[in-house]
Length: 271
Image (cartoon, rainbow, N blue to C red; front, side, top):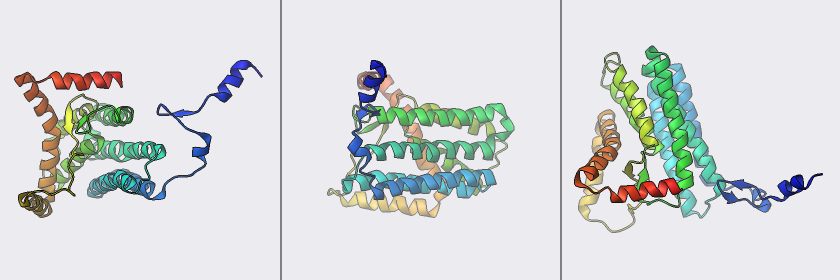
């Protein structure tokens, strides 16, 4: 056996730039947070199956349910002190299915098939950008400002596309006159995921802290509006969030306040 082979055997295994001890691999996984991640993955897969079967409303709500489970698994892991590197990597793989493949196939099956090659390339670009977005997030998670995401998060992009389908179907809007807009939406949301445009993460919002009564009233009013006309309100809310990044960036450019943005971009390149 050569010396090079011996050295290769002694080298520690690495995942995501971190060393993994052999003993850690034998300890197993935390069930509760990874169960929630699995439910998010199953919801994403169900959305794919529903899109292929032509049940587009089912596909849309499956993506919403997937977002719900995805928002819970990390919080449960932190509350129960069951965070792990395995959970981080598993969550990213599940997100690629739920927020990359599922909305990509949904939009392609529902509206983009007539564009043939241009249509499936748009869906493919979206899925590729979702994968790049998730990989970049994992690499930079410890080096960027927690208040902001660089690029729209993959669940946000998925919700923009899913709420658009919900709005068009429930409001009886004909797809025929809007196919080019929907194709453009796929390209734009995909590219926004890998952009360096800042989006609020809302991670600094702590609902356990004391807030004015008006805040509670506002939350209740928003919930009532969403429950009354979900197809309109969800589409409006997520579209506004998608637009908030580019509008905020152009405002910074116009007011000359781009220094903070350039510092974030430099951190991204170092990461």
